Amino acid sequence: MKTVVLFGGSFDPIHWGHIKIAQQALIQRNADEVWFVLNQTSPFKEKGTSFDARYKMVEMMIKPHYPKFKACRIDETLPTPSYAINTVEVLQKKYPDIRFEWLIGSDQIPKLHEWHRFKEFDALVQIVVYQRDENTHKYPKLSGDLIDVSSTEIRNGTSLKTHRSVLNYMMSEGLYLEDMLEHRLSSERFDHTVRVTSLALQLAECHNVSLKRVYLAAMFHDYCKENTDDAIFFNTQYPKAFDHAFAAKSLLSKSYYVFDKQVLKAIENHVSGTATNKIAQILFIADKCELGRNYDSSPFIDLSMNNLNEGFKAVKEANQAFNRKENE
Image 1 (cartoon, rainbow, N blue to C red):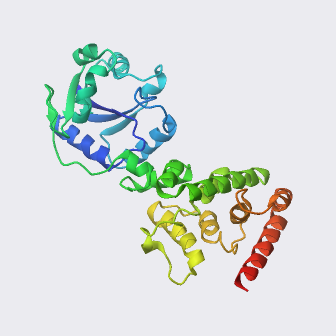
Image 2: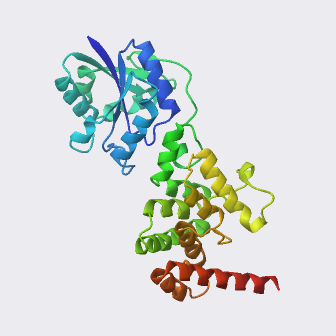
Image 3: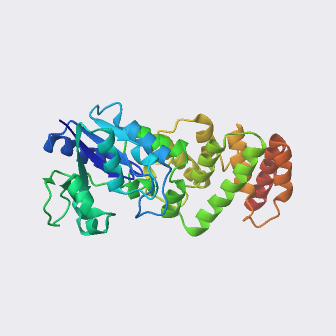
């Protein structure tokens, strides 16, 4: 009989630590396959990334490289909240010729009694435990080195330990950007970024420009404004006022594998306004005219809504005049 280890989780997002655990489960349990069972809605989490987005990231991670790993979306068809026993019951009925095992981490042992219908679940399927700590239990143990990474660290931008296709997808779909900014920026800089993004999206919608691309450019434009950890991405030939823009562009392309030239140009030139593609124009206007600025920007916003090119030209001229006055 075929043996499949079920590896349940939110995978929000999946990372190399998950892959390492799945590899050890495949070998140590002499299993035929490992299925990544994505939760529709975890009973222990109030919010998260969409099921489709998480499923796509799991597929990106495993499909080209791990033929014995599969992404399982059975929970998508089940009532919410999602419980492990419901998943196993449906799978056993659908695949009567497969022997299923359920993989958990040893950190979950103290909470097992809280699981829905746990006694029935325990009798229904073999639980196997990846030993992460000293918790004792009666179940078969898996062991091996762990990769020091968590989904939380990837969501807040402090780790990149997932596949490059996942990192690119995160950015192109605008996933976790708010988490990254909240973790990295001061409240004042974060609020500025939110206002810039709000205005940028209004302009994008008005002028039929991709909302996803504009959202990424606007949310990331000041990502390196207050942080020197990314000094490797700074260009010392740039004036001080411009170097954070170059750094953000470089980090986005080199660490998150974003190669959208218009988005990158928009970020790099959002201080100077030297890039003139529509995304760059929108970001420049939104950065200079967001409602938190200490002047009435409404005439520029109205003009930009009606005519993007004229609005961009007017904002740039006003910004240059302001800079000349400041330097006198």
